[in-house]
Length: 340
Image (cartoon, rainbow, N blue to C red; front, side, top):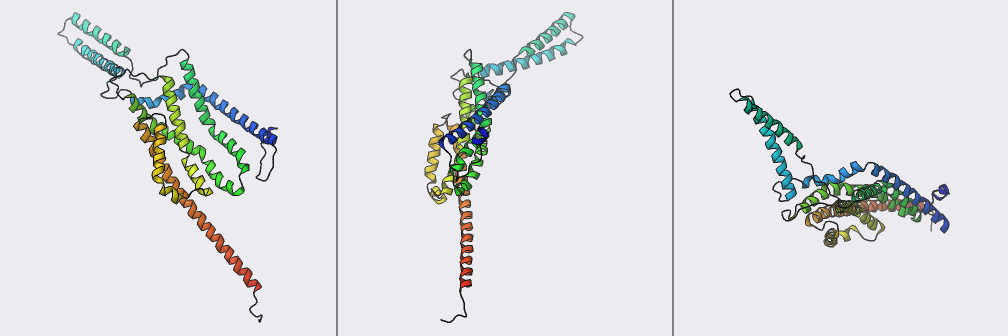
């Protein structure tokens, strides 16, 4: 049944409702199976996954001049550690002096050992990590992060199944336009996720976590942090689909690149409003989201213009060929020796 449902379907084939539903069911089962496999792998490697998600927090900790009490306490502990280590070095150097009494050398040696032990017991300077407040929050937070990671890993196969289901409804000409665009969707999504991870999240988190830090004891709850980070990653991945939409509407003929250029100011306004409504709602996140969208919009217009010029040249060549063909046929039927 599955093989029959997934057989290649052409545009001229006529399938019954039951056959369409059977094909849809099979493709949904494949997508679900792919998601479960990817989720299992992500949950198995949840420690590595959480380390990756926590990495944008590294730039928010131990900011110079920070008024956050927790960061100031951590910095003070590191200064104490350095002080004890220096004291141990000085004590050992003094204990080696011969003019000192045996009791003084013993006290200095004992102080050096105590200073070493105290310095060794000082907490290490580690990046900030999210905190959990509920009994089951460590498990639920890990589960949600693994689920989103599994969805991200399974997305290319899911998109392929979706395309394979809807492509038979396209005419051959529409398929020529749609296929190159649809094939770039997974790559643009991944590019958006990577851009958000490396370029948007670190400055956004740093700004939000250090804003008015002298008035708050800032603790970052794991549930809220992972929700914010995942939403930013997913939204940027979806927003990077802007070129697909622009190329699709221009290739179909709904709008032209010239019209898009003429209404550029309205597009920038829409991008600004959209960035303002996205997760974060702070100026840093908003600007970091607007910049790539504007670049993608302008690049899409340029690409649409190039494709239109190429299509116009191809159409012109076809017209020339048809004209030459018509002239040839006229010459075959025309007899110059025939008298009127």
